[in-house]
Image (tube, rainbow, N blue to C red):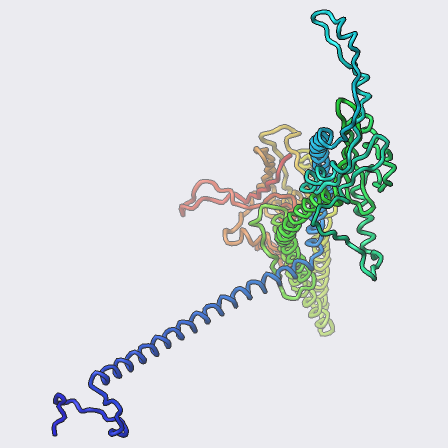
Length: 635
């Protein structure tokens, strides 16, 4: 039989086809495929959500790690800065000022006094209202009568009146009825949390709001615990400090008996018909404000109403205010500590780095130590850094100069010593007197050369120390030059070279310079001797002194062959000499070097150039001689 289903669709049979179970239809197959699709979609969505969750967790982990690293660096910076004594001093000094200010605000604040004054005024107004209510409705009804004379009433003229006098009215007795006072006082005082006491004219306590209760009220008494302990040392110290800070000149409050109401000053004054107030302090340091007003009817004082604050209500408000100030202080202290550490970091850290670099320079851990450069800072730290850098560079330059000087000295001394050694070793081998005479002259020449070298080296080595030890003083260069030129002309020499002197652009006092006269004289003497050694026989050395705007300029001219351009800088080096017309070893080569060192120590400069004339046949200017130029700062 045909199943009656469309072609291409085969029914699915459940197990036990004859058991009456439903046969699955094509619609069920479609639903199955839809369910599979939804399941796969849900799985993909769950996988995507898990991937996004993992990415978020990873990003959160990186963010937390970054925050942790930042906190770790901040903590390390805090620990590093806290180890500096300068940081601790800055923090302590800043906090000391803040603590002193906060203590002054807490101890000397007008808030407490203003609060007490406001409380007194409030209690006065409250007491007057309550006293008026008591006087109008809480007095005993008496049977006192007023007697009138009928005859006097008959004898009255028109416009006259007759009645009891004031003395009779004052004599009327209106005693306070405690049974009426109690409910009124309870309704008026209970919301204000104020203690009220009423005294009669004799100062006997009639009503105390502490003992008032209404019908249905539950009486509750705070009993001490069975094992009550005495206050500890810390609590007693706190109470004593609180009383010392808050008491001032306030009297101590004492609870008096019910028959001793006049022992309270304010109550006694109220019974005399005056409003009075009093501020006291109890044994726990709490401020008690009391106000007493008279209870009077027909201007007759029937008693006194005394209102007083309960416990520490004023002190609680003061403590709350102080707590707020303390919170502000803690926040300000935290901010000040952070700012102090940052400030100290800009001071202590650069100073520490400069000190470490200076210590390394002292130990010479490496060949050359660089001092940290803080010159970009326009403050004392930047100035200190620049000064230390300049000092260190000068120190290294001095060390290098000493090393170079030692090497040059060793080299210059080695040459005559080698020549001496060779001559001495050759002496035994000399066969003739002529050979021995020649060797002896070599030995004498080398000894003179050594003596000259040692003298010049000794002078050069002492130069820096002398310039550093001696204080600069004004030197009259006109007088100095005149003396030196006169001395040079007085010495008779074979070359017959004369020295002349000329001044330009100033008077005698206009040629003053700060410095050391002996060393400045050594400069001129070296230059004159150098010029005379190059001048021809019978020539002249011309010394000219000029005054410019800020300098004194000295020119020393000779008539020699001049200076070759390639050696104009080298002639100022130590042990360098260029004298083709003289024999070897006649000059140590230190004269011009020493002169340059002295000039630079005085803040001046020295240079050399050739004096030239008309061009010769080759078209080049003819050299007339050399000119040394010295410039020194003038006073």
